[in-house]
Length: 140
Image 1: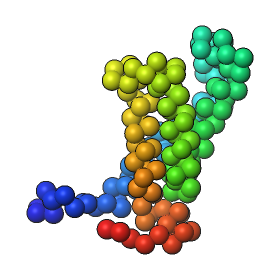
Image 2 (image 1 turned 90 degrees about the horizontal axis):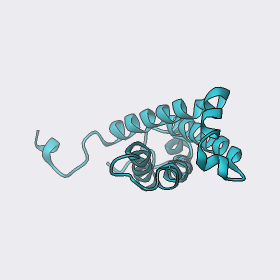
Image 3 (image 1 turned 45 degrees about the vertical axis):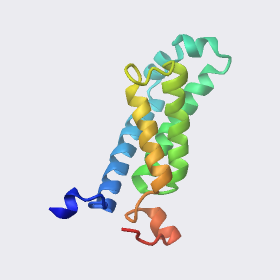
Image 4 (image 1 turned 90 degrees about the vertical axis):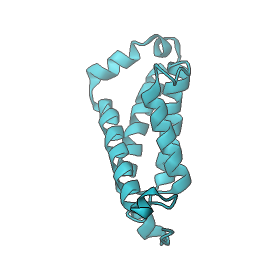
């Protein structure tokens, strides 16, 4: 009980792995829309993308980035690359498409950005392909 209330990490690697995999699954779910023509056409009809000369590229690249980042997060492979893809894509959604109203309208994309920053700084944890490939030593 003392460890639970201390400032020391509690079940650090298991918790980090669980959050990483769940975030990855959510990103895969959203990125899978890449294969749904009707849903992609809805995005392409948004004013932001209709007015942009490269709107179709932005929509398809964003969905592809979500899908790729999600797969990388689930596997724990190149986790920092997945973090950067997520920060860029969901940051664009929160701050450009959503006009930066992250305290109300665009909380969900912004929360993905914050979680991606967590993995950018902390790494994937020892329960990941990155740890096996790069022989990461356990810190906790």
